[in-house]
Length: 112
Image (cartoon, rainbow, N blue to C red; front, side):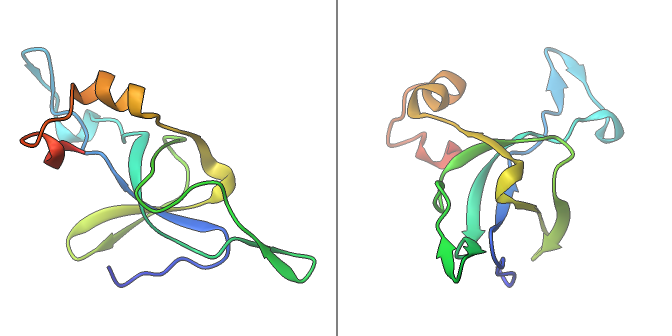
């Protein structure tokens, strides 16, 4: 990754869009941008009153964000989303991750 966010900006690697809905193939032009992703880089926080105010998220957190929030950038052939801290809607908890991906075993850790 060659991009380093500044201030309260956050770089997210979005989950891949679903290509199928049941047995129906969805063309790439109709796939919606995912609204869940993993934080891969972030700035030091918002600068207020002469000091940086840290943000509540950290690298590796899975977060929810608005579908059209931020700016899409491509780096090393992978699409990332650069957005401000205020565009994050929530943090996905471990319970939600298990619900989405199933129980975590040694063989399924690469899904996260």
